[in-house]
Image (cartoon, rainbow, N blue to C red; front, side):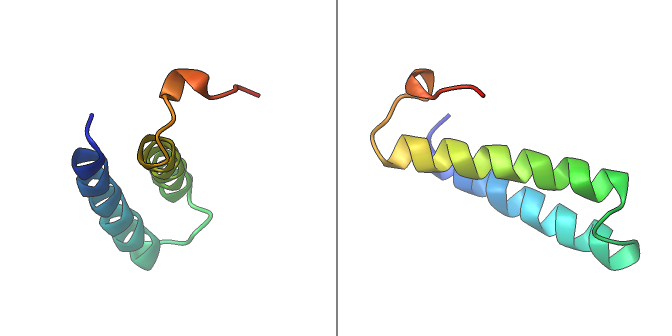
Length: 60
């Protein structure tokens, strides 16, 4: 996935999270799931744009 594609996905998930949260709460399970996916996408973007391979990423 390219950095531009990741940014598109980030924006889609951000909008989805905001819409869900406006109808429920920030601790709703679905909001938390979307937020977690958003975090993953942001991390992927940061690793990609910093010239690091996602394979170099350490898992904890």
